[in-house]
Image 1 (cartoon, rainbow, N blue to C red):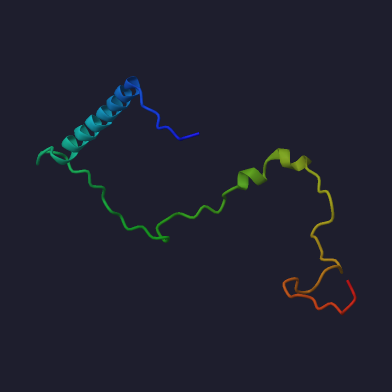
Image 2: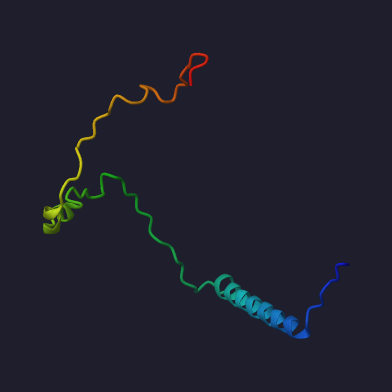
Length: 104
């Protein structure tokens, strides 16, 4: 079976041409309004302020209202906390362990 190139219908060509004209027109309108508007156009310049971390306020009570919520009083602790490491495992799991020959 040979590959045959499909022909685009006239209706689809007209739809695509219309979309292209609309996008081209919108682009031209934006270019003319922004770049060729003349000297009386307002400048959009935002003032630059130099803020440092010393100028920013520190909120130390962040989340305090969440921890003092009455709904948290009914929660129960399941398990033993803090978790203590057991005797299983290696002291450094990232080092390959050397197995004696024949042992697996």
